[in-house]
Amino acid sequence: MSIAKYPKRSVEKDGKDLEKTVDGRHPFEVVFSHPPSDDEEQGTSSHTSSSVPEYSDRWDSAADGKLAIFTSAGVTASEKIAGYDMDGTIIKTKSGWDFPADTYDWQIIFPEVPEKLKNLHRNGFKICFFTNQRGIARGEIELDDFKVKIEHIVTELGVPIQVFIAIGDGFYRKPLTGMWQYLKAKMNAGVRIQKDLCFFVGDAAGRPETLKGGTKRREDHSLADRLFAANIGLTFYTPEVHFLNEPVEHWNKPDFDPTSIQDEMALFDPDDLTFEDHPCEMVIMVGLPGSGKSHLCGTFFQKRGYKIVNLNTRSSLIALKGFLQAGQSCVVDSTNIDVASRRKLLQVAVEMKIPCRCLVMNVPEAQVKHNLAFRDLSDSSVRSTVFKMLQEDYQEPTLDEGFKSIHKVNFKPKFADEKLEKLYKMYLLEKIGSAKSSI
Image 1 (cartoon, helix red, strand yellow):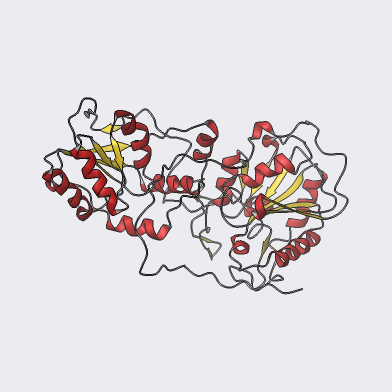
Image 2: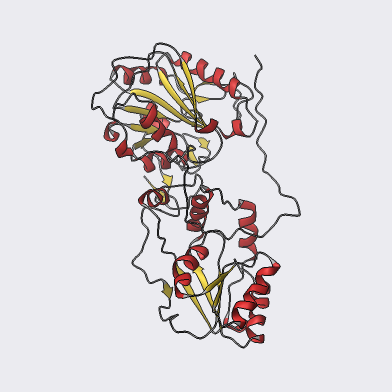
């Protein structure tokens, strides 16, 4: 058996040939080939637990290897789930490093942990761990070595536990709910889970850096655990509150709350635009990836007869001129973030003596990042480095450039079905926070 070595994390750097071209596909057409089932569809029994406990330890794999599950001997199904993150919640490193040096660099985080879990088990709770382990997908950790680690941790705790391991990114990684949904659908013997009887504990809770008893505590690395609980609808605790009975800590709320989308606002600001029976014109969209440009073009302009042109290739500019020469109004669906990129389009409008209006996507940065995460689930992603470069190059359009008018566009998403709407209204990002604090 090999001993896994866990290298220190480093920030990826892109080469100088980084492409700034961004795919213009529709950002709100997400289809899962095998979508996880909804809460209401899972579980058929109202009994507290299954009558048949697991006879021996078992490993399972799901979702083409994106999810691994360990079920220890003695685990029984239950309507009550005591859910936990693992690193920083159940265990910490012996070395004191952020990341373990090898398979055996771990220890139970607090002496109170084993007895707490045993008491919950005696009271009918099923103990489940939900852990993100992106390092396995990256090849930094051998899955077989990590399985050994899990088995040793469960043995040390001395209580039956079921462990869900999200390998890599995607719907099974917290704060998304794929691990929880798989528990309900496949790993609880048909027993319906009662969310009001369940809870989740994790250290990724969005807490700021604080001085505590003369000792500085670093800020939490993310909000993934707190938002995982919020997406499911579970009561949430930090390890210090749950195991040590410490007071509830302050934490930083996300900048964007996807559950409170405003659709009462007007689409355009100011709201004095007309597009019906309009002479041939060019409309230039301006906005970062994920701000909703393609969504607006597909849902608003297409049915009004506008030709949608994405200027990712040289032939697209030729097509734009052809449409305009034929008297067809066009909307340019590209980022168009700087004066230089807009100038070449405005020159076409001047040469052809047609008016040109500008529509600027009025979407906060936090919501744009949420939209990108939503689009990423349909495997149309924009890397964070590309987004940052585009953001740095952004120049607000002005009438001096030659536009007839400039209007802002408020983001009002529409969804193909309820499942997509439900997905969008989840917290999708791990590390969105601000100075706003809450208890």
